[in-house]
Length: 226
Length: 322
Image 1 (cartoon, rainbow over the protein chains, first blue to last red):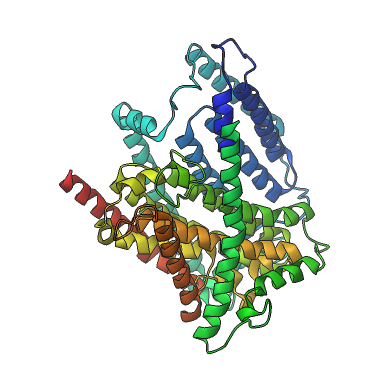
Image 2: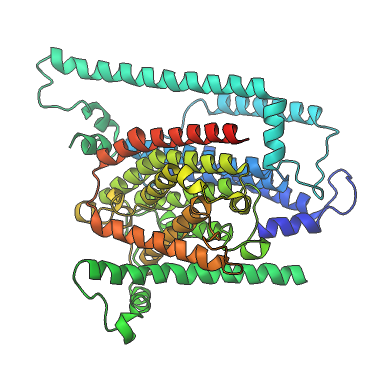
């Protein structure tokens, strides 16, 4: 933070020329390149856990970009939600199912060209929309932070209350849906042993262990059942 | 140039605190635990009551061979201790020790978010260590760490949000400026939930299931030796400093003291932090380890509802008094 705030005060002397090489803009560009590179490695690496860790670099790089644009609140929320929770959840899922050390030969799919096409199309559409919408908008990096917590909160709860509330209802629906789905799946997996005699002595988690590289059973379920 | 000097000085002070306070807490733990168990603890190193025991331990760790298992993922295995340790250094920057801007490493506008976000990153170090060791005990430890983090991050965030609501700001010095003595009873439930959840996030006993040495060796750190292992231990004690400091500034009023002692704010902060650190040690000696399912149950069925209730209480009181 010290380095960042120092950079903020020293940079951006002359008014906005297109890509005028001020300190912040150079830093923004460099961090952007790193972020982009990390994102590329994330989708191309053959090592699953490495992909998740490169995702940490990517999301962290995005947070730094937000910081450079003085959107401090969004930056920390980005770190908190994505790096702190989503990636941890991802790693948890990977370790629980399959997380071999070294390359996974099957970590590739025949859809890579289709995926590339969709990714390029989505990126083009997003860049076009953002450039078109904010062509004349400039952030004054010298003035008071445009993205401080106060400014973000005020605009969120004064101008954008309805989308915000709609979004929270959407998330609530997703939450309830997830609970309903998981309950249903549990009922289905536990019902066969009751009906068939062949299932005696085998735990419900055996089908999962087949997917695991080392043939380990699902450790958390074993822990929970103890 | 004066600004650069100022920044350097602050960074140096924070770094010195980062290097010394965890060791002081570690030594205190040695002695307090020993006396609670009817032992003397370290008595020889350094002469007076074994004060230099941790220095001797550090020398011992530095002499040990640094082993990376053959099957391990080398780079991630070596990187993990740094990822576990550095976030706590960053968090220390944001904790104010006294009133005014002179007594904090760096004033951060969204300080509460910064602190919680960066603390969450520290756990990634344990996950990386657990996976990269290529050891089933380590993997189990990593899994338990992840499950624990996911469960206890939520109550921590919610109770911190409750304080932020009460103060009307998410800046930590701002929260301290707004602090009144009656916040203590008002936010007491939140304070306890925050402290307990923080303990669980640090994997301190009784929440040390992920590193339970008597059943999964030492969890994610099974394969570590020498300095890298010492770095993980240092991260744990730095985590205690950070958690106690945070609880102090968010819930216990930080530099506010009962007699309004001017110029002695930093004494109050340190005193409250030390008392909390003593409680952390005390809990370790007192309570047996929680089982994995008890641990999850405590978070989801007790701490989360309590923190939600605290937020509701904060909201109601806030509306009534304004």
